[in-house]
Image 1 (cartoon, rainbow, N blue to C red):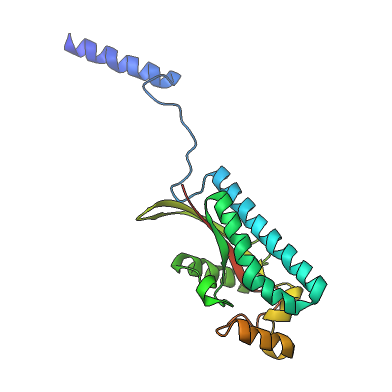
Image 2: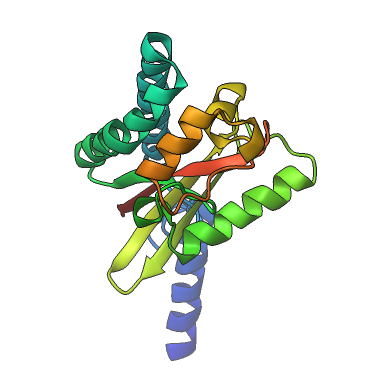
Length: 204
């Protein structure tokens, strides 16, 4: 009797399994633990794009109005305000980091960001184009899980006024940089290389 009941139960379970019944939940595609949800990743890309566009717009206006010298002031005062505004709007940390920061107090990345920046440099050295290069990852920290995203800021011809080889930077700009950024490391870069990156970090 017990054997017959056991066989019936087994047969019932097999039927449910074959029909996708309650014995087996419907299969759902699940992202790996370190893969960002699509919506969160798209938001990171959007926020990063807004920062890039905002900074570029302010710099172009300054250069057109007063020349490259004015861009130094914009970078020092306006860009942090743009980053802070976007960060508040998205509830995330959105800013710029570099391995060669102009202002080490603001531009140094944390250990994760420095690792990704070095990977960007290696990829460019292997022949990849810096334009459009990005990296994203879900990381677990003591305070929770976060989406981390970085997008390369490639050196453009207009960047050379303030970030190119020191001997090619005009004397007025060199003097202004020395005054505004006494610990400046952001010179000697070439077009197409990695200037830095936009970084985005938000709890999941």
